[in-house]
Image (cartoon, rainbow, N blue to C red; front, side, top):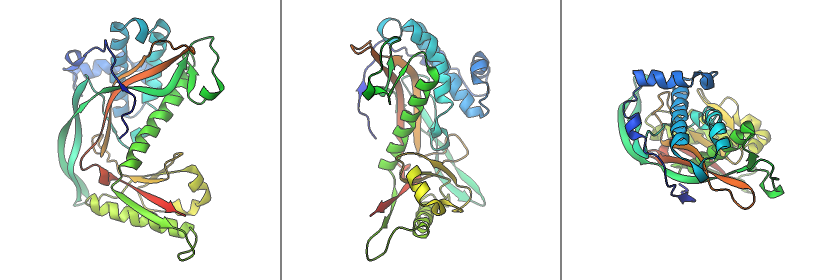
Length: 317
């Protein structure tokens, strides 16, 4: 996985002690949700609500203890709604496991030895260590009154425009996870087009997807992929290839995804890939062009046995 632009951020608080008593169902769990009820309105999934609440609290703590060049007054005000909008709208919720860190190092929970048995999923809950690193996002914040250069319009937004900024960050994070998965898949099906085998057709492509799904089902001990990402251009060109594949299978258009199959269980910890955010957002010092780089601190991990959860069809020709 790509760990470029890893940097160290001085002054990051270690909130492990403050969060060590947070447990689902407990008093602290309830308080964390109630503290952010207004911003959580409209989020119905209980896991997304809880994770977003934890990250809102992490951002609040960060805003309180860090001053100066990494957090200014305007960012302190806008960062809270920004966190709510970003982390409640990630497409990644449907594809991978998202578990917040309560400190710079922690553990993630995952399903080990998962398999289909007697019509149900069995396995055991295990843990893995994970550490958060600070990374620079490609999305940048433009100082109020500064002009956004033409070559920066795709990745820049004014801090006051939280909706636009959140949309750009969501797109960047989702793209990062999809790229990681495509680069680390366990199973690849290649569909060739040449004079010998003929052109790519909807039927041939549908058959290749079915074949890949069956191979992954064997590797996943009876669990068949339940989501598919497809580049919109392929979906438009071969619509029939993606119709009536199997159930359950959710199909999501995603630019640059190619054809990527994956499995994520109903339990939040049943996945092969994990994104573990710790400190949502801070800023770099103001740059000469009037922009700030957004810094975020998180861990991510593809488990040793996580690659079989993902596969792709490669079109050759």
